[in-house]
Amino acid sequence: MVNFRLCLFTISSITLTFTLQPFHVLSDEAMIINVCNKTPDPSLCQTCLNSDPKSKTADVRGLAMISITCGTRDADKLYKDTYNLYTSTNDTALHNLLDNCWTRFIGARDGIDGAGRVLRDQGSDATKLTITRNVIPIITFCSDHFKKNPEVAVPKYIIDETNVVSTDCQIILGILNNF
Image (cartoon, rainbow, N blue to C red; front, side, top):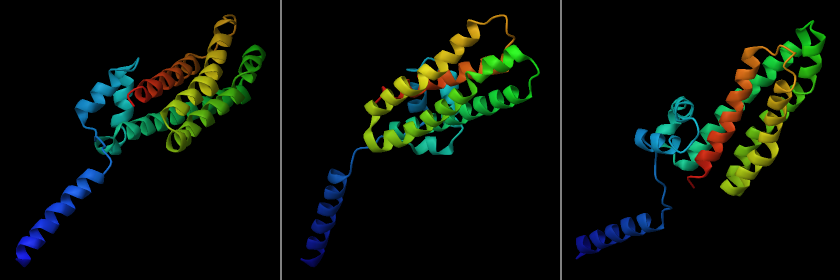
C-alpha cells in the first residue's frame, strides 16, 4: 500500500510539474534556420546566432537576445571605426561629414543594447518599437547623408559597416516577429 501511494504521489508530482511548467521550445539547428529564413539576410542571421553556443539551447526570445548582442557588437565597431576616422582624417569634407554621424552611431549602439533590456522587461512589441523608432532612423540618416554627398570619399569599410548594422536591425525585427 505504501509503494502504491509513493508511486501515485510520484506520478502526480511529475504530471503537475510538466503541466505548470511554462512551454518553451528550445532551439536546434533546424529552428535557427527556420527563424533566420524569415529575416532579410538568413546567412548573416545564422552566422550571428551560431557565434553564441547558447543558441543551441535558446528559445526564440533567447535567439532574439543573441541577435541584439550581435547588433550591439557591430554598432560598437561602426562607432569606433567612424570616430577613429573622424579624429584622424586630414580631409576636411570627410571630417565634417563624419561629424554628423559618429555621435549618432553611439546612439544606435546604445539603442540596440537597450533593446535587450526592453525585450526582457516589456516584451517583443516594445522591442520592435525601440529598434524601429530609436535605431533605424539613426542608421538611415547617416546612410542617406553619405549618399547625398558623393563628392566625399567615405571609406568602403564605413559604408559596409553601416549596411551591416542596418541589416542587423532588420534581422532583430525578423526574429522578434517569430513571437
